[in-house]
Length: 353
Image 1: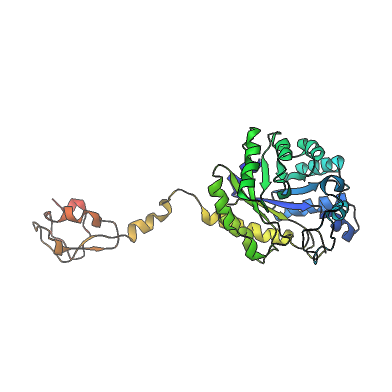
Image 2: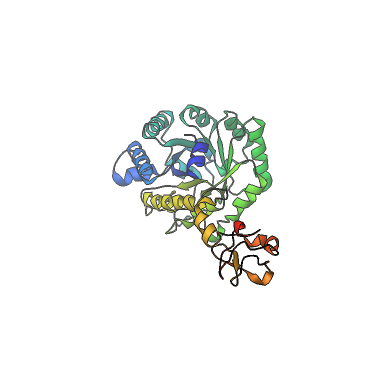
């Protein structure tokens, strides 16, 4: 199924952002990075994720050697973007090809955020979706290059103005690509809960009514995954969340990532949310017993004889709703009773002439 088909069928689509976390998992478990990446894919599947996403870059093409950090250095001590990226950039086409095929065989969507033109080109045949990082939202030539490949585009909007988002969307549209999903995002690692600003989801839905709005989350996972569940309830069915196998690992993207147990909690919550959300159509079929028994009918306040002409004081309204409805009371007044009736009789049309 495509991303859009999954949303239609399931009601949500969760992307486990592995990024480059598999390098640390490999070191921790004394296995190769490829083994670690596949292990993370396997556990993502078991926990119910719909897709896994990596990050494809070379330090030399993404950051100057003089790029300062913008993350919480108490969690990730590296103060140079270049030095941090250099630690995690050994994978290239052959490795991503192997991971793409592995995901296809296992039945989970694979894609990777490209951070340079070369990566964007060689990833084209390996994935069904392009994901554009918030950091590239104003990199309009790069956005156009990826959008022109006519695959769905997920665009994160962190640290961007509304005008910048419009410019990026228009850049995609000019390529003829209208398969756009915008992800509300806050570029704080981790994002304090009070900075999540989930109401921006509603703002983006109003501003871009023709496109799906999702949420890329950088808060630390809360016990019940309420941040993400709230985002989905507010109309953001596509969720991207950093993913690790060990949230206690220092540095990089482990400290604000979910693990498989978090995902299981999230999936259980989202499935329940979809269950109670139900259909947009008003359904009275399941309420038929209540319609019949909890509504009211026109009922006699006293016993009457055949030939009696009904007055307003002869009538009241009581349950069940199996007789003439109170909405017809003015029509009933003045009618003649055909037979003797007891007090509390529920009036039916065939009792009147």
